[in-house]
Length: 194
Image 1 (tube, rainbow, N blue to C red):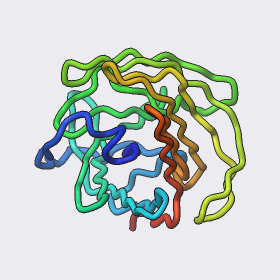
Image 2 (tube, rainbow, N blue to C red):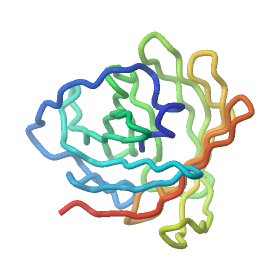
Image 3 (cartoon, rainbow, N blue to C red):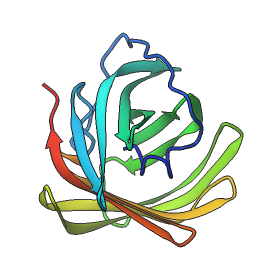
Image 4 (cartoon, rainbow, N blue to C red):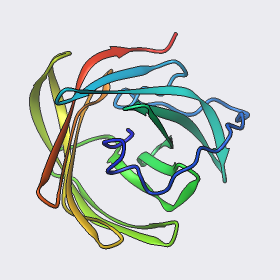
């Protein structure tokens, strides 16, 4: 999911034009990626919309193109679902190598994995741990797999990141704590793709 617009996903600016993939991207009930699927979030008084607008082939992976609109700006990222999990493959115009695992599949309480990637010359590191938690957001109450990292770093920026994945909806809540800031995204409305 596009992470907190200008904080997590502001690796670099600039939108790449979409290139159509030969096959539609794989999807997961924990991250529905059908074209047209839209999430409407709130972050305090602010609104963020994330929409699957197409697909693109990046290397050997067919990825969903997700565009986030926030405060008049747009950010884009590319997500792929593989047997091993859900991966962020590209953010803006910078590929992430190796792709960043957001959720191992099938999700299971107690699972953990390390991230050691790079994008645009910046290292991305951290350890993610899975738990189960019921959360209440404006869109409703959901049983979720809570995925968190308390040692996540992008370059020299250290932060704590948590995603709550609900079956059939994807990310229903996200929290980022960095440098004294605590930003929380909560799902207000979910629209599945046609």
